[in-house]
Image 1: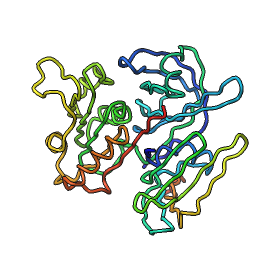
Image 2 (image 1 turned 135 degrees about the vertical axis):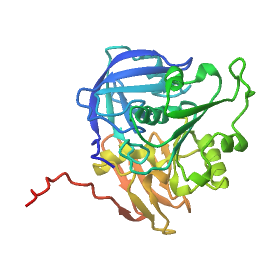
Image 3 (image 1 turned 60 degrees about the horizontal axis):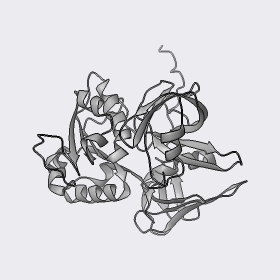
Amino acid sequence: MTAGFRAAWHVGRVVSRRAETRSAVRLEIEVPTWPGNHAGSHLDIRLTAPDGYQASRSYSIASSGPATRVVLAVDEVLSGEVSPYVVHDLREGDELEVHGPLGRYFVWTPEDPDPAPVQLIAGGSGVVPLFAMADARERQPHGTDFRLLYSARTPDDVFFASELGALTKTRVDIVHTRRSPLGSPRPPGRLTQESLAELTFPAGVAPRIFVCGPTPFVETVSRWLLELGQDPARIRTERFGGSG
Amino acid sequence: MTHVDGNALAGTLVDVLGFDSTDAIGECAGCRHRSELARAHAFVTAMGAIVRCEACQGVLAVVVRTPTDVHVSLSGLARVSIARRVSRAPRPPSP
């Protein structure tokens, strides 16, 4: 691990927002005092109501490096407390409190001396920190092999679709659970242990594995990985609940 | 209620302890299982969080928020081992 990016509270300003998918928004937030962040880390957004009530939620960061521009992709959790505000009400120019960068456990850095390949496995919006890792790898001239296996409902629900399509150093496989793209050889359906085995690095090459998604997805995938002989010490997971 | 990873408590732990401890190694006082705090199971509500051992589900830590304070119990943790960060002291000049 290189010198850490120390976590602190900061004030950021939304400089751009656009639709990421039908239910998610991509935000670019300028945080003048941001120290930079490793790929895979997250931040907490804190909202304060006029009566002083505060609510905070964690969001993965899609960007990495020493920049003060932080990119988020936030999926709306229906009945959530924070994400509906972020998705629908936050406007360019709005200020918000952010705490980070956080989560030094679930990060990948280009200086990582481990030569083993890196397997990324995403469920839904869990792709955000894994995209940050693939993007960080993309910017390195040399390094280890990356693969991303991404479970998404339909082609319209894929985050960072054009960026993922442009990756040259990460092999990307997308499994669509509800609707496949036209002409796809793979019918829509949930990820199975067979397709997991087919679309990920085998245990024989001892990959490092990062899994991020909703808790049931992460539980299932983790169990399958262990059954496929992967080393639990090399699997790192990030589950998110539905409190949005 | 479903759980998330201890990793999700990084922000809370920074506020309470002053540093990001998700990669610190915690030892369960109940079963002596040792692993990164990020691997523990976190049950998070608006009031705070309960952190349980991934091996025996014993309670490692409880965090309760009130309007004025944050109360932290670490009674289920026998030990926490924190990697010392590499200092950036300049090397002495070569002779």
